[in-house]
Amino acid sequence: MMQIALDRPWLELDLGTPCQVLSWAVNRPGLVTASRILWREVRNADLPPELDVDAWLSDELRQRQAMDAVTFLTSRDIRKFTQSVTKIGETAAHAVATVGFSNAERVGHRVDRTREDWGTINVALFLTAELTEAAMLETISIAVQARTAAVMDVQLDLPTGRATGTGTDCVAIASPPGAARYAGLHTEIGEAAGRAVYTAVHDGAREWMAAYRGTKNATA
Image 1 (spheres, rainbow, N blue to C red):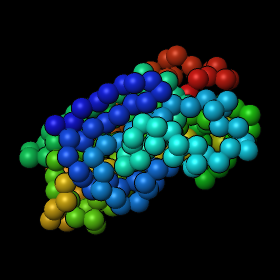
Image 2: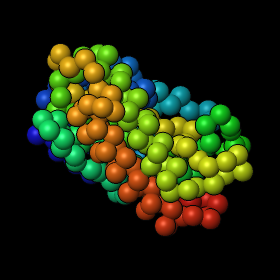
Image 3: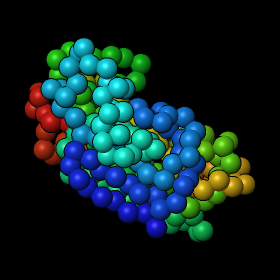
Image 4: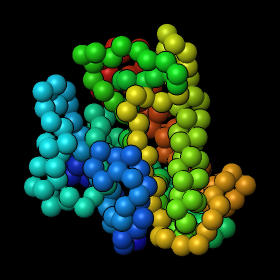
């Protein structure tokens, strides 16, 4: 059974058992086996330009005895995490998200974010469905689609157009390995995954917008 533990500057999602995890996270990207997903809250002062971020994060994780964890970095106040649980048929999905827009972008464009805080949207999604590698790839596409829809629905407008995400978003999908080959929008897996991610991201996005809209140097 999954558990969430907040120990600022860390947020930990304990998956309860070793799972296959697919992500492009800073620590342990790609398709790996892991039993937990971590968020590490940072500020600009933590990450000066000359810093070797990978070495710094590895040292932080060693001190926490967590080198095994898939790990995100975010400048969002991790106390503001949101979560959503959805069950469709035999598939349960649990999404946990931290949502900040201080470096929001419109896909296909770039805004100069020099000397600004870098927020991000980090999403971890656990599914009870036992997925093949192909289904994991399809599920992560559904999660990204859900994240983008949630961001667009809060209507954050930039000089380049309506925001679709941030420049440093990351998604991690976790599930037991198995034989399920498909996870598209017509399936229970796709519906559960999409709804859980959409709800968690949309709740976090609305909270950020209510607190920081129009604030140039918002804490992401």
